[in-house]
Amino acid sequence: MSAINPDKLASYLAHHVEGFKGPIELKKFSDGQSNPTFLVQTPETNYVLRRKPPGQLMKSAHAVDREFRVLAALADTDVPVPAVYHLCEDDSVIGSMFYLMEYKQGRIFWDPALPELTPEERRQVYDEMNRVLAAIHSVDLKKQGLEDYGRPGSYFSRQVERWTKQYQAIDFEPIPAMEALIEWLPANMPADDGQVSLIHGDYRIDNMMFHSDRLEIIAVFDWELSTLGHPIADLAYQMMQRYFGPDWKIPGLAGLDLEALGIPSEAEYIRQYCDRMGLSGVSDWPFYLAFSFFRFAAICHGITYRARQGNASSSEAEEVGAMARPLAELGYEIAQQQAAKSK
Image (cartoon, rainbow, N blue to C red; front, side, top):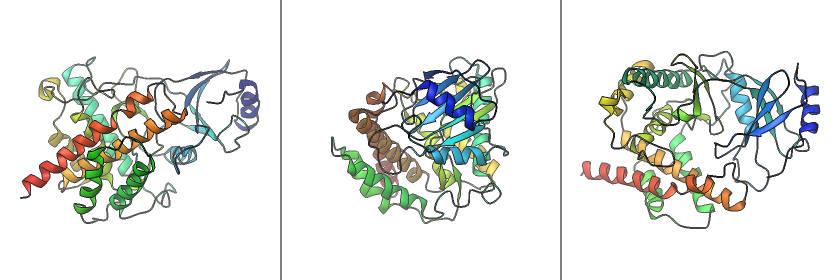
């Protein structure tokens, strides 16, 4: 990955960001598999820089300009996000497009089992995540200038087509369960019910920051996959970690006693979300869940591709990419269970 010239970057930012003063020191955050993220330290304050990876990339991937746009649009809403200061589309500055945003300080919980908290605190965390998810899906698209942030309608049809093409474009290590889901999902797709909202696309516990002293979300990060789409896609995506084992690269809740931990069951979490959104319930839940596993498997497959091309953001990319096969297998297992119930 091309090195960033800190002096050149500091000079650029001083001319484009109000109050910015160098010199700067850059430190790359080790986590994250997509857009490389850096802590920008100055004598007076800290910032965060998100860049598009240099090199050959999958089409439409790593759209940091879209991240910048949605973060700016959400600044005065109920969705907690960091402030953004500048988008640079000139590749000559650091070698690729980037944006500068606020540095937030707080707590990030990496394990959804929340071993560091009490049962009551865990319940509060899950309720807060549910509240913020509903806030994202309640954003007034017209008021925030996001009406054209994605194509309304036929979300799942378009997404299945998109991720099928991305999976098939990577010519190595075919995954039989992915091939099966590519057939099953179009054949079992629910009718479009017209629900359209802003969706995050990667809504899980480690993509949000909580206040240092309160169990309150102060920032939701990693909006690269955000678009206009069906809100239940976000809900199902978040639920996937309940099926991951605690020893997975991205840990999950499978096999744990959720009631004893104080973590709401899947059904309870869905009911809380529906109450907040004014919904009577969620039909076709197995499809949405199977779709989420399929989509995430395709994403992980792409991470493996980037790792082998040498432009993955994290040194752990191969380990995350290796999740593609078990993700696809879990998704197809859910699909088969649904098929058996419908007979």
